[in-house]
Image (tube, each protein chain N blue to C red):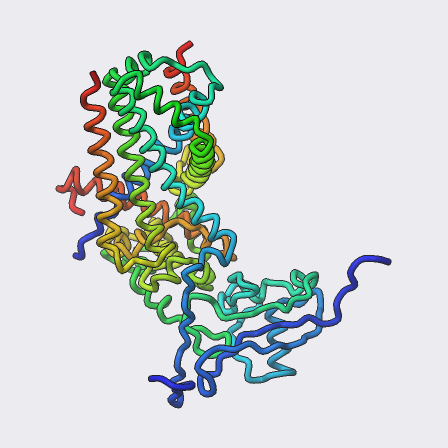
Length: 138
Length: 117
Length: 254
């Protein structure tokens, strides 16, 4: 069926609106969603960074010093600041959304979302503190 | 009875990786990529860090952190490619790239962490 | 006295599609009286009564319970009987009214919704039991707590705003979609229902719950606070626990 209308009596031709490749730019909630999903790329960057560190440590003093030097380059610092921002965005969105998947009932009442999210943030602080303490020593 | 999808397994890897990376990735990047190189904190020596790394608990921790974070990326990025770029028709290639990539990363991490002198 | 004066009229830019005349939709502009207690539906009814009787659209209860009047107003899926014109009075731009996104347009603002009806049937959105209790055995008893377990999901009015908001459904019409999954959950969690296993087979599929990426817009636009996004995420969790259960304890009859 083609042509203007292609109308058969009592059988109108439905119009299917195409979805743009840039659908995610049409509304701010969609863009925010895509930014949230993009954080996964920065999670991958974090893993690569960690593997580079492990490799440098294995190879000895010189390799480690070279890596630290490289990390001091302004462009690398900028990239890692961006990475950290996206990782924080991942943390916040993940913790805020996690309660929607779990309904915890205690004594017949549903635990409020803020409590579950709050315990995630608490665990985050504890875990981060532990890493800092272990790495830097006291 | 139709076969149920095996997607739950991939989703649980995504969730586990999501929790671990949410909890630990920020502090790792803040500490190792910013605070230490830029001198905001007193830098631990390479000797000290290597000592920490030798500990089996540290290596298991790092292996789990890296592997699950990579599978978190794989799952999320796969769907971002489906919906963001609308290339779902290439789904076999996308699947292989994402989970294959994560697997390569996991094997690399395993290799690096297996033998720390 | 400074400040903006209340407008006398407001302009609506309404999508039209007349398949007998044109192969693509177009827009018509209408100027309607501005009353601060009017909703978009009132404006549409005014247009149809006084200006263009050929304008086609669905509506019924005009009070936000039937789910018929869902349309896109300035790009947002909304019930036109619950969207006040006064919200748009401050802008000089016309109010754009379009048919609900992600559905084929039959005419003007009327969309073809049989896909949604098929999805409702496919998830078996009704009480499933091995054996119906005969009337002589009395009623099914349900405590308020048991009701609480599914009540939120029972508030769905099938308005399909969530489908219009869902980019996954827009890109892949095979996706079961928010409302259908929320309604499946409504029955899964109903103490009188015995069908959750059957529905798990239907929903734990690649174009069932696993196509959802938790964009969350479905819950944002829902006029009844059903939270379909939450329903889907909870279902992902139970499907996952079920999957691990079937792997680790395959004898437990799944």
